[in-house]
Image (cartoon, rainbow, N blue to C red):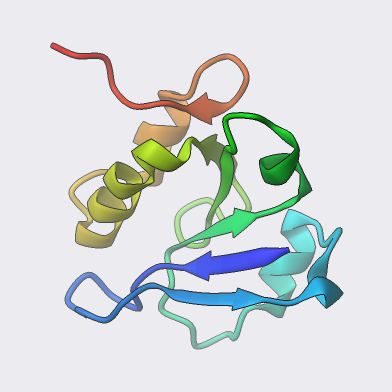
Length: 113
């Protein structure tokens, strides 16, 4: 499993943090939540898991760590920038992306206007 965490806060200009450790393979969303530091300022997390690697469109798991901890959806890599930017700047909520995911739970971007 590979964890890719976004910025500590919307005002932080650092690069996303990443970690790769096979010891976490098979870790559930609820287990991930218990592994987070209690003083963490992260509001969401991207995770590359077995499902990500098994599917042709490589949908990355996104976990809410703030409003509804444990709520998830998946996002295709080409739409990750939209999720990361909007959630880091807090100009959109996690639920807006999760609720806009297709029936299979994957966010593929917003329709062209």
